[in-house]
Amino acid sequence: MATENLPELVIRQVTPEITIFSRPFARFSILPFGGRSTAVRLSTGDVWVLASTPLTHDTKAAIDRLGPVKWIMAGDAVHHMFLGQFKAEYPEAKVIGVQALIQKKKAEGIELDGAYGADPADTNYGFEDEISACYFSGFANKDVAWFHTASKTLIVADLLFNLPGTEQYSKSKSSAKVPIFGKLDPWGSVHKRFVWGEGKDKAAMARDARTVLGWAPERIIMCHGDVIETDATKAWASAYSKYLE
Image (cartoon, rainbow, N blue to C red; front, side):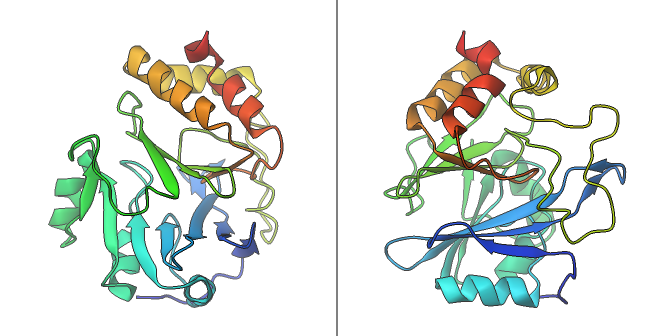
């Protein structure tokens, strides 16, 4: 169920269809990655949510203004902590994750209604006319990339970072600066090495990186870091340059 509001949460309407929910989050209590959920209203009026932050009362109010939630999405094998919270509040919504989450969530009493990697590759969950999906089977965290066609927006969890996350830390007294490196963005060598190292199947990664590049996104909303509002396709091409050579 919905929880108490977080004073450091930033709620922003990115487009008329998309609202994001950004907050501070430190990985290992050290690295200021930030966290973000994203809600998208489709032309049907139904709402698709990448649930990666707590469902606070103000988060729920903002989502409910968009419309009824029909899909609750897990970004990958590690972005799943708040699925149960969202499902409890939106019991009619379908929960979609990845294969690695099936047993983990079942043990918590949550049955996934679909899972990338377990379901046939051509499975449609009902939003594909407006949001395309690409399951990165070769990525360590088994991430999914989604593309909202109408707004030309790419939505990802760990496939792309753009740190420091100044928006996510804009209401926090903590610093958004990444220790040692200062930043982790698609144009830097650190990010290139990161996605190369996380790619466990290089051929699959190259295939899927090209799929996303072919979508030609104009905006990228990631779970960790500032939203990329311009040159999004160039940012993706830079981050995945080793796979696109």
